Amino acid sequence: MNRRPAEIVGSGYDAMADRFLAWRDTIEGDPSDRWAGELVSRLRPGARVLELGCGAGVPHTRRLADTFEVTGVDISPAQIQRARMNVPRSQFVLSDFTELDIVPCSYDAVASFYALNHVPRGLLAPLFGDIRTWLAPGGLFLTALGTEDAEEWTGEWLGVPMFFSSFPPKTNSQLLDEAGFESLLDEVVTFHEPEGDVAFQWVLARR
Ligand SMILES: C[S@@+](CC[C@H](N)C(=O)[O-])C[C@H]1O[C@@H](n2cnc3c(N)ncnc32)[C@H](O)[C@@H]1O
Image (tube, rainbow, N blue to C red; front, side):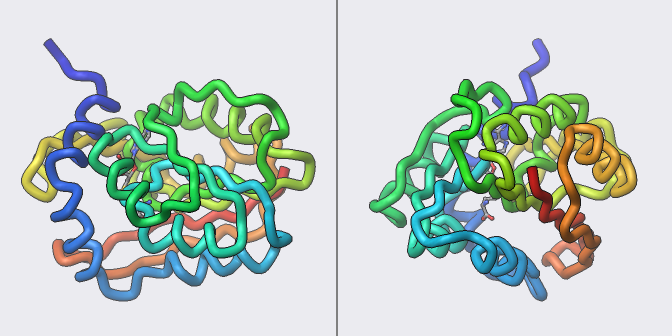
């Protein structure tokens, strides 16, 4: 029987949570700190931030939690366990973030670093719509989106079965626009993973 993408992703990160962190350290030119800074500089202290696919909580959840009230969501119990240890002052929820039930206007910002390229791309439009409703008026959405035109890619990654899916940048931008977001920054950035160069589309958008 075919496994659901979310199940492949969750059990994959469960099996290689520590390997992922070690691999993450070998990336050259990762621009995510700079983009996190774009968000941090636009929020007031104490702002309510929801992070989707928080992983082990480092480095980004921890940085955000220095100034904001952060709730992290991840589908992998091993990742959530590490996040709770690494960032004890934040709240963490073990869940598929495409299935969250959140009261409208609950957050000042939603952030997601390198997680939405694990979501079947047909779910991106409804997810963008949900994120917009979770944000208070004027709320910010920061994310890194995949840039390949790939309906699904399932294979071995970091020693485990993994699922990826993404649209090209033009489609990503169009979906965000259709969801009602106002684009503030939108840039494709290429950097170097051990397996080769990768490009992600960084977007900072406002409700
Ligand atoms: C590449 S890791 C990135 C982790 C962290 N954001 C970072 O920058 O190091 C992707 C994370 O997203 C989580 N994830 C992927 N799809 C998810 C989903 N549908 N719901 C919840 N978490 C998900 C994975 O379990 C994993 O921890």
